[in-house]
Amino acid sequence: MGALKPPPSQRRLSERGWTILLGMVVLLVTGLSYLRQNTAWFARDTALVDATQLSPAMVPLVTGDEPVALLFTRAGCVVCHMIPGIPAAEGRVGPKLTLASNGPKRLADPNYGGEAKTVHDYIYESILSPGAYVVPGFPDHVMPRWYGQKLSAGALEKIAAYLESLSD
Image (cartoon, rainbow, N blue to C red):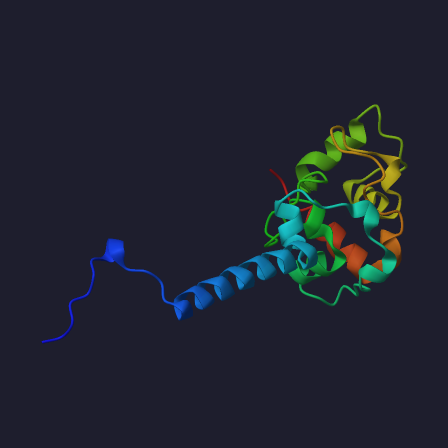
């Protein structure tokens, strides 16, 4: 007959078991630390985004040849904005980009200080001159002023066409 095992409440981890458990804890802590420092989605979901710390070198040139979802991801829009139909675009730092609904309201706002006459032009203006109108409830100087330098004309057009088709 085999040796009797103690009941589960009296079993103890062996030295090897403790080593494995400690290794798993170290891996978990290291992995979470890496995610916190190196992934936009973690920062976005934990409200740690500081868009003022972005620099032009951190954002690749977006050509407009990319599929729409990849275009918004590469441009960094997903970090700060909610964009329906774009996976991972659940940011809360900037306004929700449903501009078929919200664009006309913003253009009609007495506080609007830009020059756009159409929603399409408003989208361009919001990217190229983000201070022309700051949506109430959102901070000014968060949208980088240099963003237009990282988007080709094709990318701007694709962004505008997509956003002006979205409504709540």
